[in-house]
Image 1 (cartoon, rainbow, N blue to C red):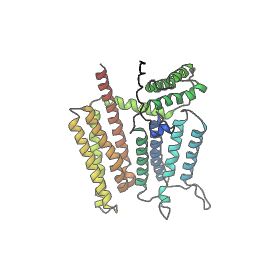
Image 2: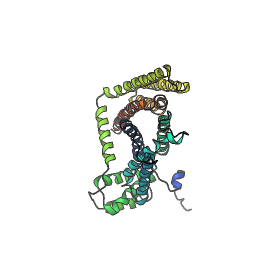
Image 3: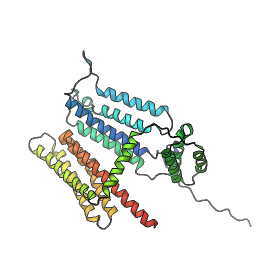
Image 4: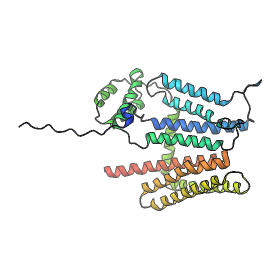
Length: 351
């Protein structure tokens, strides 16, 4: 009687993107965040500079070189860079240049949705904000809804090696590649990739990454802030206060004769109330489960960012920008606190 060979465990069916040969870049969320932040910052800076200089026009003799053309040129430059070179080295720069270009492009959307080319079309701010939010939701759907696959981690390590085989590894690049390889585990190809990484020589020369430096500095500042126990609570109080002030101010302008539609005012009131309620739920639960409570705080900030701010931009256009900046700061503080709390929970579980 012959012994039966042990059956191999059935492998899960790979995601359709993996079957199509489309692994996600492990650093993709960072690059997309750079693109969206650069877009929003470019729009706000452009509007501020134009207002400060009296809205000058570049051209003459019947010509007007609108900044939408410069935006298209910068997006083309980003495409040329990203399509010309393999490896991850140019992606931070491509995301930054592309984001600035898209910001200059979308800033002039008012001219292209009105028959009289009205740059100052009232819903322009809401349209731009909705566009950025929609792109952010698409990015979240791509990278935040499905956990990383070990094969994607392996692809990330191989991608880092693409730059290393020609230019060598800096300590940071080697650390990233080895971290991706560790996340890949023992998937087919991991052993060969480990040997490839070991064969790559060390080299200190690499392209500067100003976005990475700024992001690292922001993370350090946020982690320093959350060590003071009152700061996260202060952040929630600021969120609730900001929602109250901005929504009440918008309603007051509408009540005083502003021509904004009533449904926009109602939307701002409802969304602001939902955000405050979610923050209140977080305050009630954070005493019993800090992580769960801060998840509710995060939901409150996201409602304010994704819904309330849209209506506020429609009501008060660019005056709502400061509220957006406050929401982003609060989201950063809450996210940093969540990371610290989760790390402590993991350390307790491991110990």
